Length: 243
Image 1 (cartoon, rainbow, N blue to C red):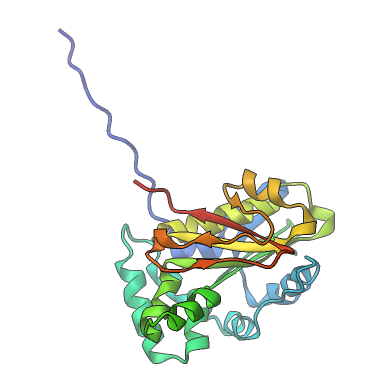
Image 2 (image 1 turned 30 degrees about the vertical axis):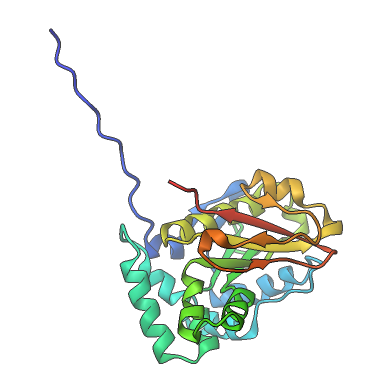
């Protein structure tokens, strides 16, 4: 009788900090990578075109300029568990003022074209509203800040007008989720103005889109409250799959 062999499933190596810095090949000849100081002006200008009146948060802009933005996240990449990430966060949250500490867990990705021009940006930040609500529900500040290791917010997503329709925004969302998923996050969420009709885009990108003004529960993150938006806003959410 022939011998049966069982093939071992190939495991994808952990995403490394170097990969996040150097980036991935994106659609239409682009490259998706961590934002550099030289990307800031163009990225900020792109954010201002979204209609949501958002810009890169000033303290985050300063952190990108001095190279400390996402530093805690970078320290946590390259391993098969989240221990290094949580250890690095513990140091940052202890040694830095709160607003500066939060920039170490903020992820700003850009898409650059073949001439290294910034034509797309995704800014994901610590979930300030969640942290504030947690403290209002009796959480200590350190415990509330620790929620930024499990929940993040898409603060802004924009692509240059001439480069739209080429799946660049989808690629930015995909790579952001890849980073957050590896670092053990439970939820990535955001919102957009309801009249912008972006529901289909976010649904195709793997997000649940909530009706204008509707809230969603945070019970999957063991939090006793939910998040919502005004009647002119739609929330979108992506939860880590249950196993």
